[in-house]
Length: 104
Image (cartoon, rainbow, N blue to C red):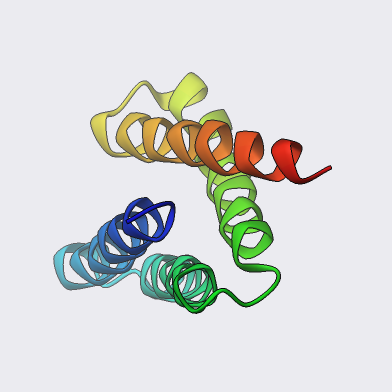
């Protein structure tokens, strides 16, 4: 297994986190954003696994979206959930960014 496993794991974590956020607080943005980013990761993982083009790029976009929303909140609020999401996004940015760089 290559890059598909981290993408599937990140997809499951972000989607389940969005669902948990909705169940805990009733936040519709949490479920929409979490599931949307999770689907991006999952679709990217599927394309990587199937050897189809743009799988790494989809996972990289998912990481950028997640990081763009969570890193500023983590810096501002210093709360566990945004910090955890920022760590996930950073891992994704490094992992899929490096894979994308190697294809150039």
